[in-house]
Image 1 (cartoon, rainbow over the protein chains, first blue to last red):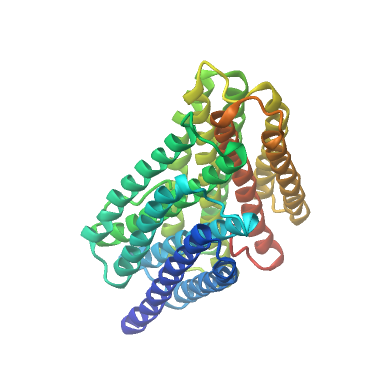
Image 2 (tube, one colour):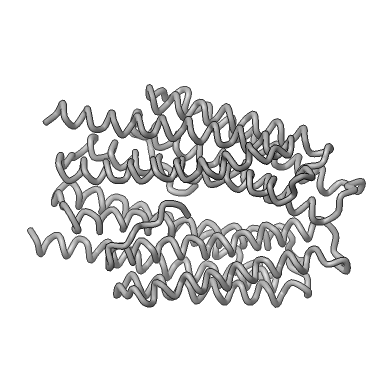
Length: 217
Length: 217
């Protein structure tokens, strides 16, 4: 029974690692679509989101199965419930990559992001990518120190988000309201991607250290 | 055992109804703060969000307790897991009300929303309110027809969201980029509030009818 539980939980963990990899790829492709007006990349993200959703469903099914057949308690139960939370965060990260891809398609063949904003979105995308990698690693081999780094990454993301508004609100901003709206939403998508990565990381830390789970994302 | 399970699940349901009421109040107050630059209302929302988060934690604790002590299977298990999903949606709806309140505070004592946008935000807030009421009712007494209405409400919300961009992108838009950024984010907060209400409703419908649970929010 114990070995069976471990094996089933391991299978769920592997699905979460797969989701983290899928979500990382999705955001990388979405950023390429955004910065190079690459229609194929955007379409790949949108098609891929259904796959991520599919893995999410699998996690849910396996968790329900595991709860029904093993009736875990205490720490075991906590681990199973945590897997559900992490899966929900990863699923949402996939949606956000999908939103970035769709924004780039809406403006195609024009770029959705003008030259002045490319540096800040390049930096936001780089942090998002780093965070997705860390989530994958932490899920593969729980590591509280690595998970804690996600908080610092998120601070850097928040700083970039603020600097994005600085560019938009500069008196010299030449692009008008439509581009500002796109940039505002895109900034929010990257920032929320980071928030969900932090959330997922906090759930894993909670498992390792018993420290409080996040109440809000 | 069976009676105990029912009683415990009933207690969880009651917490969800409480959360739905809390979230409804929060969004009403946040809208008042937004449309009348009412600082006290905004502060009440922000303070109240901690309470909603507290109820969310209680739901999680009770669900874990219930799983550990009752080890439900089949439909019973599905109901318990659904409660977790619904609680997560409601918690997020509370966050979104909090974001609306904070946006109004950032511009206080000026109104964050200019006269031209008051009608669309008034309408969005009205739909959000209607949806929050329905979620509360559906949680109190599962009703697939009422839950299905949430989809139509969400369509109306999406139409308003589009018309908001219509106002912002009108050549006559006199307010510049800063107000457009605020309006873009505010529009997103109301629209996401509606999405989570739909999601919560779909989870309840799934319980009643066995129809597919939503994969993505």
